[in-house]
Image (tube, rainbow, N blue to C red; front, side, top):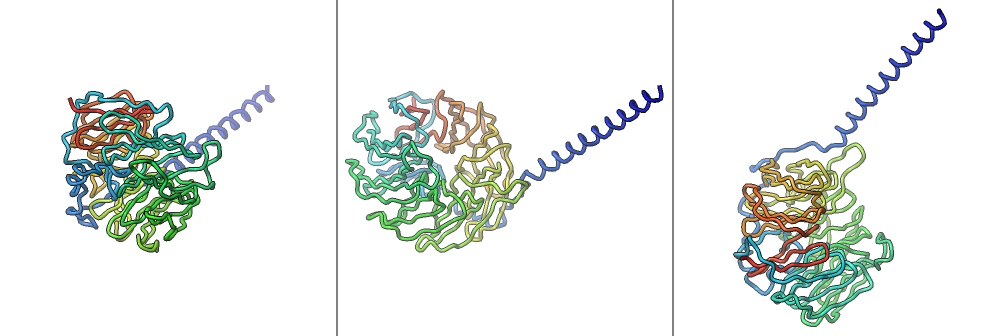
Amino acid sequence: MRGSSFWRSKRGVFLIIVLLILVAAGLAAGWAWKHRQTHNVRGSASTEFVSTAAPGRKRTRVIASELPWPMYGLDEQRSRLVSGTKVRPPYGTYWVYKAKSLLEFPPAIAYHYAYLPVERGYIRALQAWDGKVVWSRKFNACIAASPAVAKGVVYESLLNPCSQEHTNKPGAVVALDAQTGKTVWKATIGATESSPLVVNGVVYVGSRNDKVYALDSHTGRVRWTYTTGGEVKGAAAYIAGTIYVGSYDGNVYALNARNGKLRWRASAENRLGGRGTFYANPAIAYGRVYIGSTDGVVYSFGATSGRLLWARRTGGYVYSSAALWHRTVYVGSYDHKLYAIDAATGDVRWAFKSNGAISGSPTVLNGVVYFSTLKGRTYGLDALSGKRVWTFTDGQYSPIVADQRRAYLVGFARMFALRPR
């Protein structure tokens, strides 16, 4: 009997120790989870916020010209804001192009053509009014970027062959005649999925060999390079002589557009497990740079100073690049929500819960913000209130581009031309 009591008492002590260990582990996990999260930082309209530097001031002229959507994100600031058009839901389907391969990125629209990148290495020029293919070029490389169009030339970034691993393999930028598809030049650089930015005769792209390249738009000659601490997958943005780009080293860089010299470097917040990385491209307005990170945070930095002005945490990765309108930053998250965030303070104005994770970037078109989910649905929301006004049963990444008459929606392997009813 005494032996039995002894073992019962030892078992009780053992159970207490196990319980204490479990409690301690739970507290440690809670502490670790808390310290893995980036804290919200609230901003102010009185600090480096230029209300007169709103996006879209030149959009009416752009949308009515021969270059209604010349590059990814529409303009040099990557604002994704369209005005000067009456395109608005409800829509009817005008024509459908079947790509038979993944369409991850939207086309550029110029000269009444849609220049469509197809993941398995094709660039195709489709007539905007009927979807007929005018020319098609096949490259021995995967394509994971929208083209840019300027002065009769289409510029596209190329990864290495689809059968190879992408990291640290050679890639290229190609320049094609916009009317015929013939090669103007080809520049071999690191493998790149960075949508080209064309400004003042220079093509700017990032690459998987950690570099930002500035190429002469006429010859493809390298004017300068800048090496970051990680892969540069997103597109660059530009304003007032400065190039802005995010890197997988957890930093955003502001570079002199003329010579590539560093103006400033800003970081995602340190946390347990390291900093987040930047896949999204910067969007610029109001004297600020807005960019999301894989740490689930949307950041606002001063465009001139690089100072962190606000940080807003979401519940998932932020691969989505921002759209800007009406002093609001629109951005999607892997937590299934599209957020409308005050551009000055970082306060959430509204959040819309969708049917799946949001990886691609939204577009604001005539007061409606469009985005797609990885579950294959595209939403159109009233940009002021967040109320749903339209849905479409296709689309996964960056869905909508537009010209004066039509919206073009990129689905998983089809592109739709939509015309207002």
